[in-house]
Length: 159
Ligand code: MG
Image 1 (tube, rainbow, N blue to C red):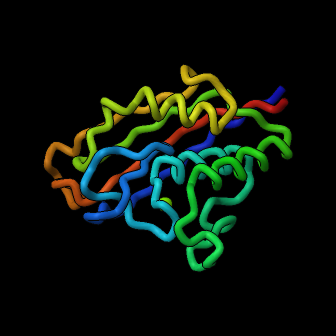
Image 2: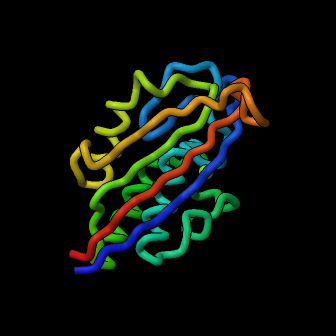
């Protein structure tokens, strides 16, 4: 059996009036991530970690943001496609760990729902999926709720 680690990062601007979908769930917030797809930076960072671990290119190459096919796409569908590619290549997800840095939506009240949702998308238990919110302490360009940055790490094992 072999194991692989992967890392992913994503960053989206938060725009007033956009749905605030992060980690595959809709958060009650007046601004949401801008993007060609639904802008779900959590699933995007996670998918890049998964693809990176498996050596399967990256999200932007598989689902180009200039392709009308992916305009308004549900990132949960992209994640399902990524998981199918992993399985076809003989990998399964052991666990993943995600940090969401934002001063936009509150993350803490929704961590449990995100873990359950992401676990369902990956085909693993919610306790193998961790999600943490992180404040930016009012520092830098992302402060004041203008954006969301996400870092994801995952571990895969060969089936
Ligand atoms: Mg993205």
